[in-house]
Length: 262
Figure: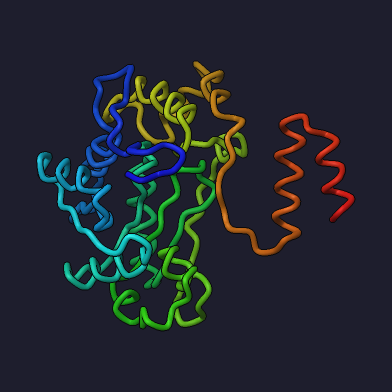
């Protein structure tokens, strides 16, 4: 709820369709999954998230509240309290999901006895992470760094103590590069336009994206200027990303200066 770029976005009503809030879009799509499990909204104890808990209560959605800054402890407490076998992590600012891919990834995760599985080659905003509940129970939260606490799966990704695998999807590079997460109003406008063509059991997930790409490709141009936040492994990687953004914005001289610095 306290997003600096788009406050309260998870409860924003999606226009151009039926006005359903973004969080309900996610929950309703998850209910079509073949995986039988609990759908739980994990939020913080900050007063800013009181409205989110109230919304969940009114719509009969399970809600768990934990530390605002220590997001790892929030998920760890949730997994332990509910004795979860497998945690499928999605975020509330990604209203378009593909339950078919999620189901396949979960089966892959279980069949290969993984501790952690992540999807790859999906558009930004459609990837998911799968973590065994036992992993959260094994980790000593007091030993984690600040970064580990802020990012739920960072420690798991970097640790050699867990079996990790990637579930790859075969999509075109064009589709992979679409931005389908909501950080800015222009993201919200684009996803709202896409979701008006959503039809349960007919046009969903990647199938919906393929339909838009064929029939209304201009929609994907609405948020091309937006920048996705991410962690870079080195200053060089961050400078390369900065150069790319500057060149995309036609700031050639500034990009040239950074290239010379590099």
